[in-house]
Length: 410
Image 1 (cartoon, rainbow, N blue to C red):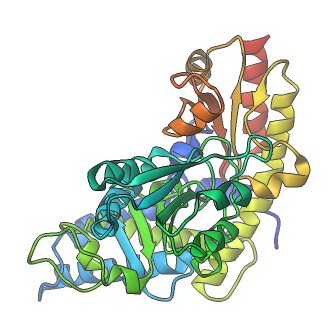
Image 2: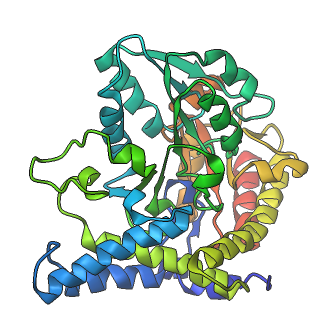
């Protein structure tokens, strides 16, 4: 692997020419120029619906096919037929929850976690209300900061229909052992639905290794446009009741993609995956697009995580400031560089406003991880002050936010 080309990387992102420090990445990353260009080009050249006999429609067909193929490469899938693309992760999860729950009976059970974003909680709670299902709550361990198998095991039984689980927390940054938790859920015959929104910007997803049945992520969290991407096992997707108009395609993946495709955003999604492949090439990887994507993630992790460790160490040196998550340098592989802090005497809202006025972009609050805030005993409105790194961030930006916080908390 070559030295990470941070200067070359930052040149790809027009927004980074501004004086702001973009540390709001868990809420949405910035977008590289090739993605912006691909969206604009599609709007200029392929602003037509699909399956027509004319050139603009055929260009739209090609964009649609390439977006699904690119997403398949990103997630380690053999076929774009298993990729469903929609408005957002939350929209797709609400939609799929209805299709799955259609065959479930009163008294059947679903497991949701105290760690997840509401996008992987509320759809199942709403479904439970409608279908008279029993909801089992799975906590995360406040010492390990992860969901542990010993906490899942007693919740499983012959009536468990689904485990809804996140890959990485958008509050604490913790990475769950999805493969082990999935294997345990499978012993009860349950389906497993994984929210990988916070993991995908930082790590290579391999659905075959995980063993889950569904996995969903958001393109705008990994340098792309505002789209949700869902992978599902073809045998399951093909037999799920589709909530779509009567004359919609019954083939995959179209039977679960409601309405006219957002062609320009699909073009942006494909360009996003190609950007990651470019990053792999720029950092010494070669081979297939999937292999170059894997190289990109390896290089990005090697760049991001030392920055994250420096940020954590600096935050812990500030009196009374508490990091809500893994801080041990020997466990950095168990987290993504999403770092949340609290202070007993300072409002996170006030701190976020003050930092924003200094050109330091970050978020505060529960950030839709409402159950995680409750589980940690935090005020829901104040939540945490969340600092999130991406592979385009620098040591200078880490020093900048640490210096600003020291001044504000002095």
